[in-house]
Image (cartoon, rainbow, N blue to C red; front, side, top):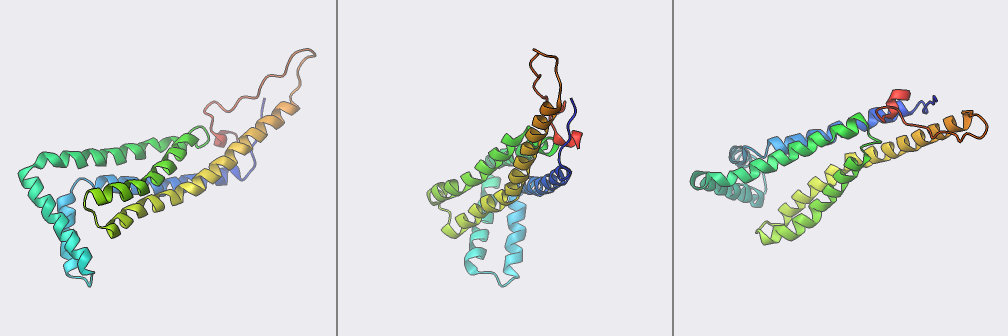
Length: 200
């Protein structure tokens, strides 16, 4: 049984991959930059002192850098925790290879990413005050969840459209198929890898 998808399915797949590339790039950058925190906060502190930055921001970054410096000198093993934080970001980025290859079959990964982005907000609001984080910095943290979900929204929309197109193509192929009298029609099967692009 053969069937074809609408011609715009290839365009949708291309757009899905573009948005996923943007999202994965953000995850990778977030992960990689979680390793050298002391060095990065030192650079940021130096730059802020040479820029017309708000004093509150400069003071906060200075405090964070000094805390990291003292902690790494006396208790370097604590940085192992942020190493795992970095690893977590990189691992999640790898998981999105599934939607990149086959967005319809791996639609759940996209949903997981959107839920995780939404979870950033309550985490920042609850844990921020407990850990002594200024509210304005918690807002910065929450923005990562907002900006993270933005590329996933069009990914979800295009994936849903691809899913509907695939289901419609299978139904049309089933209607066109002929079977001997008394033999029930076999259910249409998706492509071997489940990805719509294979039949465009």
